[in-house]
Image 1 (cartoon, one colour):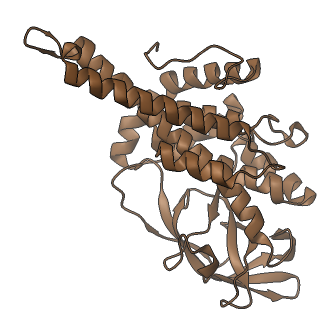
Image 2 (tube, rainbow, N blue to C red):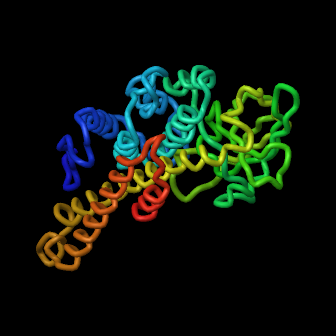
Image 3 (cartoon, one colour):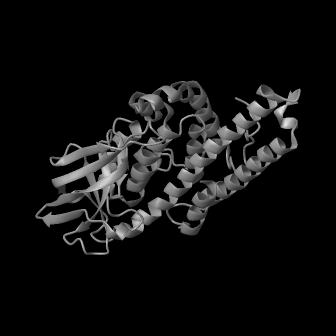
Length: 336
């Protein structure tokens, strides 16, 4: 699908290596051949396409893009994540949102912050697509104020007993394993701890499925934890030290969410051009020949290009050893 907004030249800001260019080509092919044809139907039915989702791991191999090959990943970088999120969002942003929750909020998160044993136990399943992952941070009374969350984990011998709830959790209905942020023993604490929680643990319950205005093919749900016993070995890092890893993961989450907005905007611009150049005429000539329409198309394209440069530049300067909170927040602000 050749459009005004195509960029295919390798070794530039958007394709810094031949490997990135090949990734883009592969994902574009999947997007138009497999993702686009099913998008409208699944959105209207508010149905997540789990079978197609699993092929991202089993066939395309784009789960674990930033994970070392030692654990079955591709060993790539944040730019690769941006390429995939931007490209797939041109056809199905909801599907891509579920990909983000799995790939970024769970897989990347666990790889960077998890122990060797945790990586060996959980990464194979989520990278192959056999298991679906997610992350639980937001609560009914704590969103941006993450340090005010009320989910609590009480240490008892060789396990933690988890109580509380999480709201607006992407992949909440389909997820098999989640990284859950909680407080240890005391809800008044201003520190956070990370735990790996499997959906088949006793006391884990999926509640209300949220009704949404958009992104309907991606489920968003409430998760309840009623005396859920979590093995002590599922603690990520150390107690009360989860804030740093959480904020680091949110940086790549913000950049990939910004990349989704780029994909949506790109599709909108392509549709603007299709309609104004080929489909619609006014006063006996294509709509694009009217000056006001030209201005609207030109301004949209310029804003998209500027946002795209910021998002890709931010991604190029983001990895587990380099924090870029300001850049990630700026990219999300401008692109969304």
